[in-house]
Image 1 (cartoon, rainbow, N blue to C red):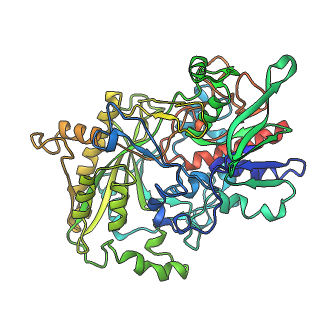
Image 2 (image 1 turned 90 degrees about the vertical axis):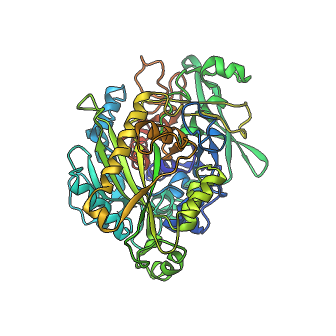
Image 3 (image 1 turned 45 degrees about the vertical axis):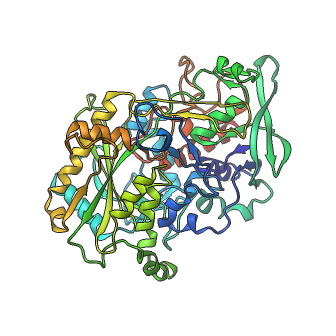
Length: 559
């Protein structure tokens, strides 16, 4: 039984049913993926937030961050549909650095070093459309990758970085986004790549039930070996069902859903479970801890020298419809984050585990920038008015985001109540360490340098700054100003990980062993972003696909 039809869960279900003796039931709380332009049309991904296919999580009020956001809280969109977050994300496909995975191994995740996971990255991907011929990339996998549509200014962004000599070794550098977008311009997710091509051939052993919200993993005595996961209880259309797993239960609910389900099932910190009236099955202190997330600070540029032809405005969607429908690409196939850059921070102290900053360029048509800056980021009406006033049909606007991708601040997820319908308490504890703020200030300075390049001067690109409640008495572009800005408009990059981390048996905070088996019980695994012990220095989609591939292999070996 696989709980969650998300990025990792669909990979596992598909790979396991390659074996004729394994039957898989996938239970997905969200609805099916009936044709939906918010899923299939890449540039509309921002509009999927706060829609029927979004869980609409949000953090508890933050003490050191999000001070300019509504209720001092960050919205956390997660996919609530077949495909999970692979159906609503920005489609960026980036593995991160080899050092990310070698660090996992050093932290107790034996067999998860870069050389161990590389074959699984290659197995899942097809980079034929990228024109690549590299021994480090795959060409025969089910997940097709392509370059995002890129606006002319996106290339100027990359050129500007080249002027500043930002490109370097070990994952540093700038380039056009590689994305999970099909050759015809539609989104590729874990349904289109893994499930849909095989489901009709495997109806005898691959079963998927949508609108099935699992509320509990069921355990039974396993003789002298303790407790075994024997199945799950789920609710569908108001009716409760119990299904038995003859082999094992695999939880793939993501960094929020997986720890919540474990705790509701009696696996987690003993005192916390008792406080919610939940019978303790296994006292695992690490469940819901070690929460890490990438965060970003947006800056908006206007390019005064661009002609209206290059502007992204209300006419962009109508102009892009016919090229899109004819399969010719165009702006509707933009992954929104059209280019990404990674720069080594001066705060990196250890050569092996260096700290990277992330700069990425977003091109947002007017209604989308308003959406992104208000509803999707829980901003106030004042932010809405600001975003709208800074977008006209005659001036091209784009955003450059300063990203913190190796945060030292760590948070928690805890139950609010023992009711599965009640959302958990999400506390990322953003910016609790001074180092995180200093790295983001450094990233803002890098953005200032872009403004001085010939590439940006050519298009008249200037950064626009608003005080956002920081007070007019603070000098713009000073460290104090940037710190205020950073603590005011702290936005998630949608990459929570780590809440059921892999670790060795002597690590009291480890939740699963290197084979993803939950400690202190039998017949239960977790396989998704929650098992990641240390957040990768890139978007987490690629890592989640890889985890699904590797998990499936390990499960097959055991059965």
